[in-house]
Each structure stands twice: as structure tokens, then as C-alpha cells.
Length: 272
Image (cartoon, rainbow, N blue to C red; front, side, top):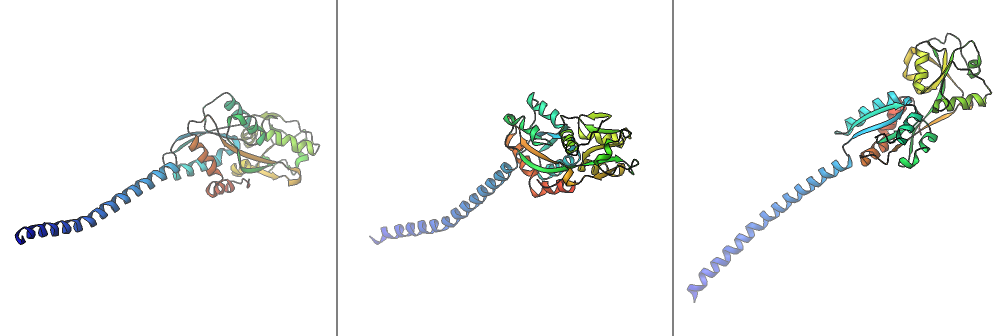
């Protein structure tokens, strides 16, 4: 009997020892797999939080300079995303959306323009505000000091067309002060107004403060008192027909982030 028990005891002892050795190995393997799974899950989550896409952004002409800066910053912090901007008067952008032009985000210089295509957009978010100034030639050669000076018929004044947000704001403040201005031309967007003044084709024009600042020393800017001025609001919204809905919404959200807002503030835009 003792001869048969000895091998059994030895086999049992060996089995116990083997099991004892395998337990920590299995635990290590399990921990390693868990770490790999966690890392994989984290990487996947990060990628999901920053969707990659080529986005087309329709933006008001007065955002030309600041959005080029914002676009570069966004692409740097969101690798794999490319932004293409199309700048024009808000009325032109609205027409493009209504006609079904492919795009992902719309940013206008007034809420009324955005409201015209509310069936085609997500919920708009106002990302910035702006005010008008009188742009004159360098050195203000005609000594334009206030709004009523624009009524001088000897002065070549250029304004944005009535259907353009800048034109609507201009009409609003001139009408409020009962000032009659006969412009030598009415331009399709505010940047065209600025260009006329820069080139000396106009003596003065009403533009946004940020436009005048973007021109540097090419023009002078005459401030308009707040009581006589109008506040321009810039709403941004993703387009419902966008093929990159998540990425479009992410860009709109970023415009209201501290990074996006700093870029807008640095360019002279006011808080929403």
C-alpha cells in the first residue's frame, strides 16, 4: 500500500507546485491584456473626440483675416482636419446655402441672415460682436470727425449695399441721426468698402472696427459713439446637410472656447 501512495503524493505535490507557478503568470498576462485594452480604448476615445474631416466654412467677409488665423490654430490642434474658407457678404452666403451648395459651417455678420436659413442649420451660437467706424484715407485728409460729416456732398462716401449686414447697420445708424448720405457706390460686402477707401477711390466709408484695424496704417478710423452706433452679432452654425456633422459641430463649439475667443478678441472683436 505504501508503494502505491508515494507516486500519488508526488504527483499531487507536483500539480500543486505547477498551479502555484501558473497563477502569477496568468495574473501578469491578465494585467498586461488589461493595460493593452485600456490603452487601446483611450486611443480610440481620443480619436473619437477629435473627428478628422475636410470642412468647408462659409464666413462673412469681415472675418477674412481672423478666420485665417483661427483656421491655422484649429488645424494645428486637430491633426487630420483641414478647413477651407469661402468669404463673401452674408446675403451671398445665405443664397449659397439655399441653393444647396456643399458646405459644413455657416457664419454670418447678423442674426437676420442666419434666420433666413434656419431650416438648413443647427442651433446658431453667437461667437462675437463688432461695431462700425468711419474709415478715411491715411491721415484723414478731409478731416472727417463724426457721422454728420458724411452728409457733405463734396465728400466721396462709399457704403455697403442695403442687403448686406454692414449696409443694414449703416442705414440704421444714419437714419437714427437723420443724416442723409448719397454714396458714390454701394458695395457687395464690407471688405469692398474698405478697399475703395484704401485705394483712394472713396474719401470715407462705414466699415467694422476690425476691418479698419486689419488695414493697418493704410486707413484712419474715426470712432462712432456707442449711443450712435450699432452692434453687429456673428452667429455660427453647422449645416444640416454636412457630410461631416460631428466635425462641423466641433469647430463651431471651438469658436466659443477660450482659444477661439482669444483669437477673436486679439483681432478686435468683442465678446458675444
